[in-house]
Image (cartoon, rainbow, N blue to C red; front, side):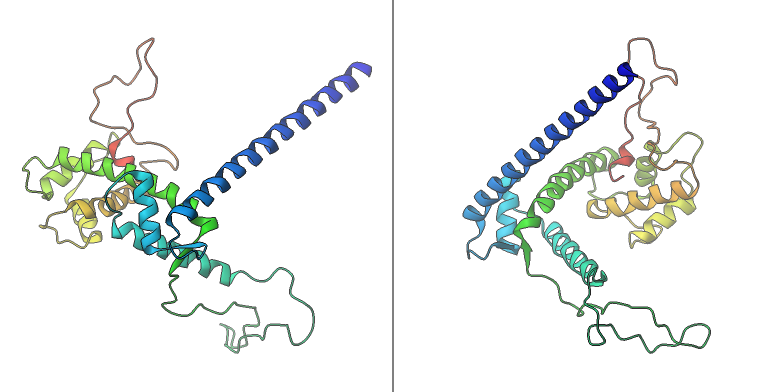
Length: 267
């Protein structure tokens, strides 16, 4: 018993020390992030509002990424995601609503499938078109991190596009698109004409059309979803890349994992 009690006490002490170190690290990271945010506000918050409007956010992202301009498509995505965040918050039911007849939400006067009423509480829908015009300072770190990932994925897409565009036309024809998709297709799976038609229609193109660079992301996302429907790619796994000629069994002294598939850039 003494040995068991001593071991338990040591384990508990180790756990407490680990939790203390985690709390100290979180406090350090939080303080560093707050200091960084204050620098951003001092430099880019031109109107001293405490938030970032579109121009201020674009200036911040350009300075961090060291690029001349911020793509409009990413800025549009930022404000759309912020609107979705606000919409999700507005739909959340209040956790501590005061009791009383005045504060109780009124049931909806809508018939259900059985012909009665649906008395379940539902939040009001946000106003149509009520897009935010600013990004709160406390959430700007989220979009800075996403912008870094966006630039990485964009560079990878450009590399894949240039490698597949053998004609140099600036757009992928059907044969070039098929070649690109086959490079990231697991063994035993084929890119059929029906597959090509499906991904091109999803990108808003006809079967005999071409795919520009800005639509390659949508094409790859549709193709990966199609492979998952076939259960060719288990959730969370990485499909095999046919661009490598490594044997199925790794040689001694070499890494066991194969090269990551180019088609997984959006996973």
